[in-house]
Image (cartoon, rainbow, N blue to C red; front, side, top):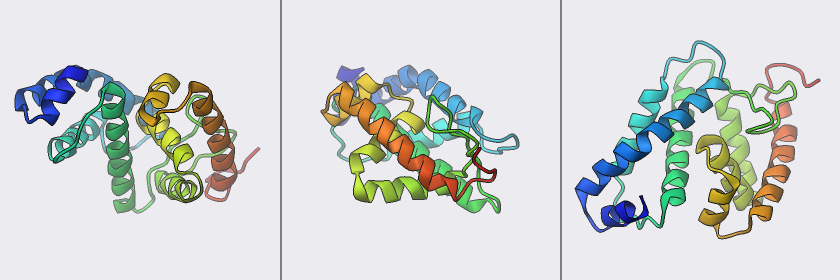
Length: 181
């Protein structure tokens, strides 16, 4: 995939199509995982989310892809933006749950807009922690992949993840639709 990404960066449109073929199943699985954390009744589908992310990717100009992890990190950013834009257009927002795998649950059920706001606030004080959350929550990247994208150790990713989860737990407590137990 890295060679295809580099070919795409060099202007090879057929490489972009091949990347779509290779990455689509994994991106769809990531999107399904994101939606499994949301309340029932969500009207945007995982397929639509992935398709919209691909449309935005294809429209990128002059990006130098380094590898698979970089590609999925950019996809994570697009999926976050798409979900937040969608939630802002809805009268009651889009609810998500953060669990132990993707973040602190413990009775918290924040909406995606509150999560986006919290991540933007976190990014001002610790951009790397916000990136770790975005790549893990929205992109489904592993700690190893995140470490590679950010050029840090896996231990640093785990530390950032733990600190960011604790911070998000405190921050989102005020935006929760149900009390923290």
